[in-house]
Length: 327
Image 1 (cartoon, one colour):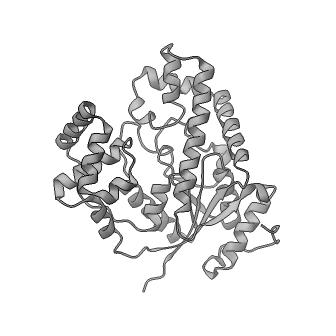
Image 2 (spheres, helix red, strand yellow):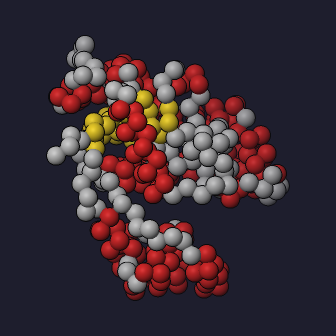
Image 3 (spheres, one colour):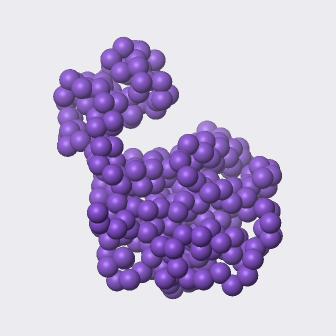
């Protein structure tokens, strides 16, 4: 059997320090980073998506960042394909790939080697379902999904209309529930031997304080101007997915005070961080790093290197020089 591809994965909630940790670890191993962020793929939108700056990248090659126009569609299937290509290319050059990001669906689908069915979207079916939602409401359509695919309905909130519509669309086109498609997609073994880290904080308030500080920094960097430009050019279809854009629209339309909108950004970002943590807790084999227990970046990196040193597949890439503090 062909050897599996060694892969380090760094996930976790927004503002947990993934960029700094991944860059520092990459410099230890001479590695390259493959982003797993569903919004950082788009050109522009740099501030709201917390896209790493050249200074933050610190000379470490980053892949799948800032390469797609905002009006171009991009699916998790596209990500798995492109990320796989980048990972194989990095390995072919004798480098270690590090996948880093907060989009749990991208990471899980990649490391579990999910094969997505070739069922293309059907614009007519989708338009009809969207009209049905507008007429009858989210719950009515979710109830229809529950009747045909209770397993998927249990996992998808009725307000997550894109996923509800997609599940119904697949069923109408194939006669097979999307949950069955997903079971079939896992039949092929993953080519990756992944060492998975999750960044978190034992003190949840510390994470929330970091989120508030990040939003303040984004404002200093020009978040409002970035969002206003997108708003005035009508490019909100993609941007509306990024926290920090849609919350400012009421301010642009004189429907809310600026301070209210900023508070909403911070609140929605905290909620997003909680959802990310919930997702990553379901990832098998994840090694949690409680960043506030290690004091500084150097100790976090040394802790991660200890995990890697236990696995012979990483011995060619780096070595442990000091023991990290207990934790």
